[in-house]
Amino acid sequence: MQNLDRLMSACFSGYRAQKFPFPFWEGNREYDALALQLEEAVRAAINAGYAFFYCGAAQGFDLLAAETVLRLREMGEDVRLRCAIPFPGQAEGWPKSWRQRYEQVLCQSDELLTLSSCYSRGCYQLRNRYMVDHSCRLICYFDGRLGGTAATVRYAMKKKLEIVNLAAVICEGNA
Image (tube, rainbow, N blue to C red):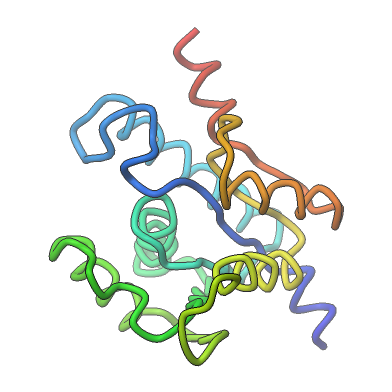
C-alpha cells in the first residue's frame, strides 16, 4: 500500500518569494505566467494518476503550489494535499500576509506531517528529503541558484524522480 501511495504522489520545491527573479505577486506578468504553468503541471500530474501532493508550506513557491492543489480540489479534482512541516512555528516571524496564507493552507490540507519537534540546522533538508522519498514526481521552479531547491532537485535526480521544472517552461515562453 505504501509503495502504491508513493507512485501516486508528487511534491513541490521552489524559491522563497524574495529569491525569485521577478516580483512574486499576482498581477505581475511573470508571476501570473508561473501560476498558470503551475496549474497546468498539477493538472498534468492528476491526469497521469497522481492524487497526493506534498508541499513544504514555505512562503513563495510552496504556498502557491499548495493553493493551486486546494483550488483544483475545490473545483472537483480528487486530490489530497499533504503539508510536510519542518518544525512547529515555521511561520513565526513571517510577514502577516504570508502567515495568513500559511494558516489557510494548513487548515485546508488533508494531512499535516510535522517532521521535527523544534528548529534544527538540518530540518529543512529533512523535510525536503522526506517529500522526495515519498514521491515519484517533483514539480519545481529551479533556475540554477544555489540553496535548498538546488539540493532538492539533485536529490530527486539521484532518486530518479520525474522532474517538471517550471523555470525552463517560463524561460522558453519568454524567448
